[in-house]
Length: 260
Image 1 (cartoon, helix red, strand yellow):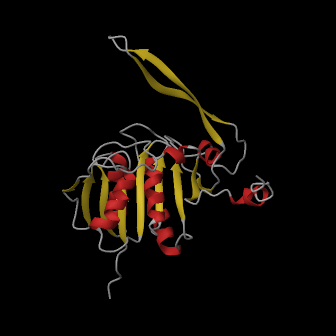
Image 2 (tube, one colour; image 1 turned 90 degrees about the vertical axis):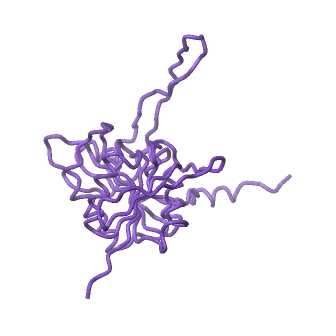
């Protein structure tokens, strides 16, 4: 008797034609039946944005094989997951994978990331989610070295099942000559951007701005995603969409909120 293949939803934020998602589709097709719903254009740093003031368009595009069906969507990565679950899929997928992102989504980047927001949206829908990112912003980034890790991580999630409400943020270091040392389960590093705006003028004298700045990591812990990546490891951070700061609730309940 044939074992039923898992149904896998694939999306990203770099657009459906990006080399990263093409690699991810290829890997997931080795595991199960693949449905691709991805933005028709780059949607990086969209975070958890959804489209409410414009119409959404969905186009079925050519498929790579009998095991892969693809759609492009005019919306954000989160829109892609929502429309896949509600309009395309007849059942919830066993797994949603997002990426492989061209560039890191470690530390504070998880807040801004369209890649991770798609994975988190899957979690909100009760679907297991993984966001994959490679620390290489080059459009022609080499994903060869990480393929086996991507496949194994996906298989482990399908085999063991993530806790409810938890998705994985997986980041790969960029290594040219050295081998990846392995995988580390990490916490998100306490790091942020020291931001500034580069102010310029058009030929007509109108001011415009480019966001710039430096990434500052003051977290010296050796259990963080930033440490893992800097030291040749793959970082895996369990992420949840419940943003409640549970550890502060007891303290806040001691404040005199109702004494007016």
